Amino acid sequence: MLQNDLLLRTLKGEQVERPPVWMMRQAGRYLPEYMVLREKYGFFERCQTPELACEITIQPVDIVGVDAAILFSDILVVPQAMGLEVQLVESKGPLLPDPIKNINDLNRVRVADVNETLHYVFDAIKLIKKELNGRVPLIGFAGAPWTLLCYMVQGKGSKTFDEAKIFCYTQPETAHRLLQMITDTTIAYLKGQVKAGVDVVQIFDSWGGLLSPDDFENFSLQYIRQIVAALKDEVATIIFAKGAWHSLQPMAATGAHGLGIDWCITPAMARQFAGPNVTLQGNFDPAKLLSPIPQIQKEVKKMLNDFGGQRHIANLGHGILPNVPVDHARAFVDAVKEYGKQSIGA
Image (cartoon, rainbow, N blue to C red; front, side, top):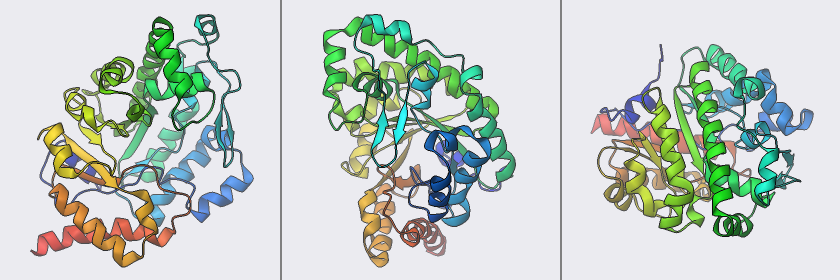
């Protein structure tokens, strides 16, 4: 039984006393307690050791006071499980030394047996649920197939992922075969997370905004739609496709319970596009957390007013930056909680 079910009630569209609040990438790089573990253990060692993943997942609940925990892991565990080598170079980002270039390379990847390759994630979830003991819900997640294809083809991070786009435009059949393999693996992976105990799942399409509306439908949304359809009756689902606000209406039509938005669209416009029957999540600019605390408090209040207090999950419009002071992150969370008290007092 959850002691704090604000997030779940908001995703169901129920009236709530205040918006719930959590932050993308809240488990990790801005917390001194995380940095201690980072010095001792490699990145994938942290992901693959349930006790470490559990400790890191719970840190922001204890330290910052968020209304939900999000599993400490990485979207690239799926390409890893499918057979590609993935390295994570500290401060430089991901490296896939042998990326996919053509149809012959599909022989090197497979739809993963998630119980064999990703059992450590399920073990971590069970441990986290036990340690949380019902304090807050646990969010599981996976990368959207398009975003995973970007890394699997490009072989590293990029601001434009030109090689991934060229792959899709020049070898569309191969691209769609790969996207379907990623989709099938992701559905099994998220179903495994639900079975292990997560309360919500979020699909991260970090690079969805690189595609035109038509290409977003073709190379991204049609696969996200399959994932949401497979999960929405089992668990609350959130789609976060950064920069793809042009497609909020078709994303809402998937039946997802929530849609994440970044700071480049107003709450009013997002609501107009998405319609009244879906919860919106966002959309504070992470860089604004470096403003003075009184300014953060003022900006948070404006954001919450603009969203109207209901069917809204307070969050950032992307992941928290590594150089954000912990007391500024806490000020963001506290400002949302204060807003609830003011609304009740009004």
